[in-house]
Image (cartoon, rainbow, N blue to C red; front, side, top):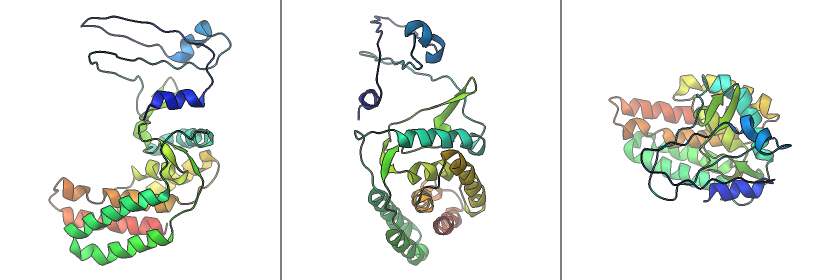
Length: 250
């Protein structure tokens, strides 16, 4: 996927300035904030997109800004960003309907049943409920892996990074992945749902299917205690499965 081409198809550019730099090690390039120079470079424009293309060699890239204090604190700005993103027309990114997420959930169920056979019946019942409740919603331009750590705060405003998972999916996907970072176990679910209320308020509506997508995300992560071989991984896996079961009816 060529992220730059996708962006350029979605915006209308009024001009461009290019610098062809031949640099030898050690070298560094610093790009000022677009809004601090846009009026000098492009009078009448409101935004400027800055980017670098490295044709040879390698480098480290650093994006200025600090992560927000937490998902709850950033939820109002996150909801406003998602509302803007989901209104943006784009048909160039990959399409990931709910059926794709269901396939991933099915694979997660098979893995979990193999490492915790005592959970197999519960997992199969949960998978059947996911099949029955699979949402049928319009597909919108989505971040694909949105959470608070994908936001950077600088001078009182937020930027969003890591669009490599961008896709066309139901709006509920981005809201569900955002709150999933708050939910590691059954006791965390109320905090996640409280953050969802804040997110919905700034988003402007209540997209159908958030519990469905949240359950799929939680199922995918339920095997983490086993994968990192925590001492009490069977109990942690069971708790994560129970959390996914509860999320579906939340």
